[in-house]
Amino acid sequence: MKTWISGALSGAFALAVMVSATSAAACPTGQSDPPPRRPVVQNVSLQASELFERAQQLETSAASRDRAALNFDRDAETFANRARILRNQANLVSSVDRSSIQALADDLANRASVSRSQASEERAQAADLRVQARNMRDRAVQLVKGGGGGGWRGRPSGPVRQTAETTI
View (cartoon, one colour):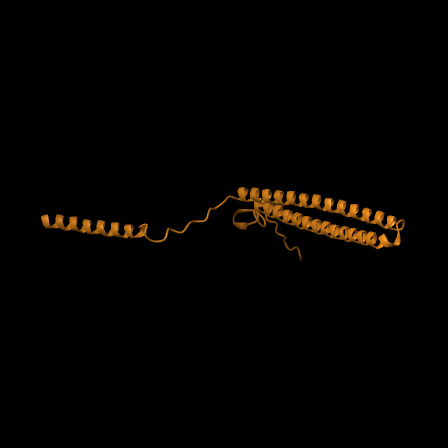
């Protein structure tokens, strides 16, 4: 009986050593690379609210671009008016000074043209930002609604309509 008990104890000890050795091998020792980070899973409402927030930031940036375009337009109008005034005054001065005044008017007209092109670029960028914002809001709405039709695991959530053939 003593041999049976000592055999059972030694078997239990061997099993305990084996289990502890395998579980210890699974634990990191600190000398190797750190364990890989698991991705953070966000719920749908958090993702949707982040998309809405980013869309709002894009809208704000678009509004800022529109204000910059307005400023460029005002500058262009000012430059064009000054060029017109200089051309009118060039007719009233001597012919010696007329060419330098015409050159100044041409320079102001070029600056007006550059300012108008910058305004149109700003407006185009604002329109692009608004399109991106609209797309983000649409994606957020799709996330909240459940992707492509709602329901659990993508199954339709409403009653299923089946049409029956009524041919006789």
